[in-house]
Image (cartoon, helix red, strand yellow):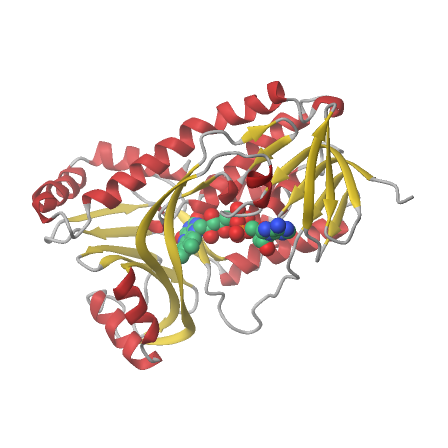
Length: 388
Ligand SMILES: Cc1cc2nc3c(=O)[nH]c(=O)nc-3n(C[C@H](O)[C@H](O)[C@H](O)COP(=O)(O)OP(=O)(O)OC[C@H]3O[C@@H](n4cnc5c(N)ncnc54)[C@H](O)[C@@H]3O)c2cc1C
């Protein structure tokens, strides 16, 4: 008879939070299995369509797990300044200089971080990477979780971590409730080469047809995220490269001059997902399995890194025999609940305030932006909060 493979922690999903958790458990000397359904593919010679604003606290966490220093910094852009525009001429700006930090964030390709973490995990003595592999069954009995893979192998662990994204299999297996609010919008992303230098500045426009953001990338490139009503999003995705470049340049007030598309546009449906309970006996959720927010805050992946930092800290302080005990896991849940809820509510409220369908709020939202601009103390406090 086939024997169960024994681990302290099994992580399902090798997205950035799953990989980072595995790396963070290296020092805790727990035995870890990381299960991923898809073989990774890294873009060669081009820019990754998925680009993140990695906050200074996420960068510090990646440094602590040994990944940050090894990233190719020539492909990363320090963010010096952000300019935000309302739909009636209001304006707000933040700069790293004003708050006395080196940079507000690092604009970084997802695959750059993923590849470094992946290679590190492959070399990690206390980690076993099972890929491609998918779980088929999860049971919890007498303080242990038993995960059966589709290929028949069984894994026994004190704790199973669901890092398997917004449609989490782990979450559905243990019956944890997820509440979705559909924005009926598409997040359209694409990368461009720009005629004018961006000088490390990011721009965000609250427009009648959605929220448009330009994030600076090295070598005079920028990454666009346009959160557009569905019909408008589909229209953008159907454009040929030249038409899209002209339309995006015009929508962004030509701040970067003429644009040239370098990575084809892709679209994602946007949803708010709230998960009231992110733990169950022998199970914890991290990353998008535990929360999803509108990309206008640019913080999705930072929330995932913060989950992982806190969970790894709790596990490192716990005896390996009780890693899956709900009293232990509740410490993780409590520590994360406040920040996740606050960011979800603020981002959702901001999205609702700027909805084109509510023109009556135009005065309020634009006055709000201008007032914040006029109050440096409030403005800088907001930036410090965003820096984590
Ligand atoms: C349009 C858009 C723009 C965004 N922009 C930003 C931004 O600017 N800044 C930011 O911080 N965040 C942004 N985000 C959010 C960010 O992409 C996510 O927060 C982050 O990728 C979460 O990672 P995750 O690992 O939790 O989930 P995922 O990235 O979905 O990874 C889940 C992993 O689990 C694997 N998996 C799933 N199910 C199984 C299974 N049953 N068995 C085995 N493996 C499985 C998948 O293959 C995948 O590798 C954006 C998201 C969207 C949609």
